[in-house]
Image (cartoon, rainbow, N blue to C red; front, side):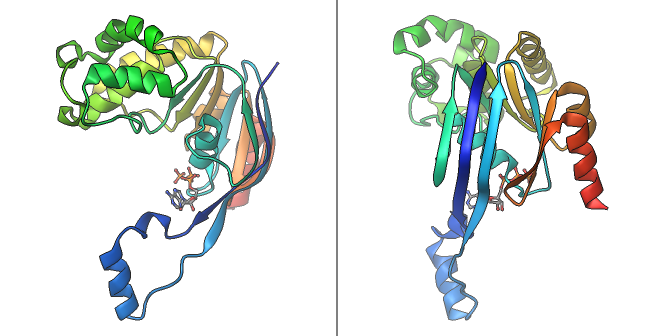
Length: 244
Ligand SMILES: Nc1ncnc2c1ncn2[C@@H]1O[C@H](COP(=O)(O)OP(=O)(O)OP(=O)(O)O)[C@@H](O)[C@H]1O
């Protein structure tokens, strides 16, 4: 059964998008004659992809080739400039953990808010609050505003919410570096369980051996284009050959 489908997905980004808010920097570069108008770049270029239930897909490619962007488009964090994305089932996006939190409101209220963003009802989130707090080891912080948590605690909370129930689709960006060593182990166990329970998995990693050992299929992206889609072993081989 098909659970993810991308048809001709492209995403354009301004090359200086991240810096455009820095007026002082922009003015200085104008005065120094160094200012260049931002140009647009195809970060994803006409991607077609169909993923069936239970597949484990490894996404590989050089830095900046569009791997994280593709995952964000699948999760709905980014909208494509053109093309369509269809996803069927509950998705656990383990990327940019906690990016959707409101720092001013309490941990408990953020659990409801984040859950609703992920597509759960408020009532369902109320029922899950205690198990989420327990997994994140934040029971004593339920009423504290999120801005008072450490960044590791924020990531733990994001992970706990996104994985409180078995997702149909698991999206992983690189090796998770959530919290301290003991918490990392807990996360790994949870991911392994989902992995074994027939979840569909998309994982970005530079660890090519891990991709070969753990994934059924591989995607090689190059400058936003899908260069290869096939067995994980072949994807790694072709990618490595391109580097020589
Ligand atoms: N917020 C942003 N604004 C503008 N351009 C961006 C932004 N985020 C990423 N890009 C650009 O999009 C391209 C793809 O980035 P992406 O993070 O998807 O690559 P990646 O393959 O995951 O790289 P890496 O292996 O380094 O994590 C890069 O050229 C990057 O500069």
